[in-house]
Image 1: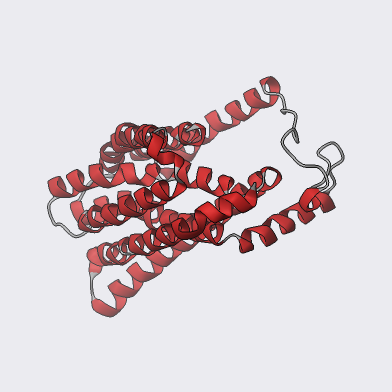
Image 2 (image 1 turned 180 degrees about the vertical axis):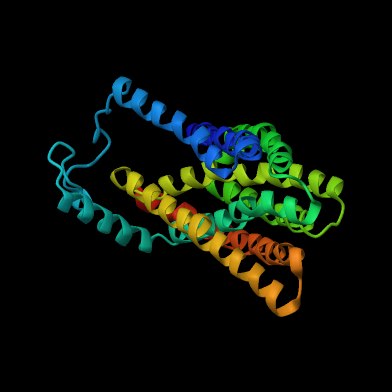
Length: 298
């Protein structure tokens, strides 16, 4: 639940990155969009540095277990050793491996599509950058927030105490969400695409908190932060490095080899949309051993 609430920040950030940045880019070019979003970030960073204190760490750690360093005497070697030890333990936890892979592919699928959606709306539906941002912004703010809160509500149900229920729920949600994620880029009508995106966008946020929570439950307390760091690293590589580059290359290939022209991006996104099925499979497999892995972690 706490991690789901934490994930609300992604909804706000995505709304600012589409609506506000889109409007700024339309009025003053893409450089102005970077300034509009960058300056508040610097101000917020300064505010956090001045007002937020570093919390005490290590209260839940079992000192000496699993090579965990004493939180009061941490060196770079300790950090690297603890991270390596976390990775070793994680590889023995079958559900943790599938949660890492499934979560990374889920971000590759969902956010990989989201990064290119404004450009798709401009190319295939003749919207301006400001119009595309204005169309997508409320989806992130309203539907994304609703999806995140709904995830928190579902995780609060008695049935969610069984981790297998959570993995099955995430599996079916991801699998079903793959359908509108594909159709949104296949239909020719802007109105139909808009409706499908309103259905798909909440799914982009739904799995963030639950997967982070499940992963921490199959890791010892002193390894949970490291496990989350590994997941965030692999997920960011998938959706910030691999997905944008791959979609760009596919779009260029379709345009050059098949004469797809402005519709080349549509075909690239349709291929990416099918990877939601891949993510769902890993989440399903994670549920098969998650109970035993939770018991081993404690």
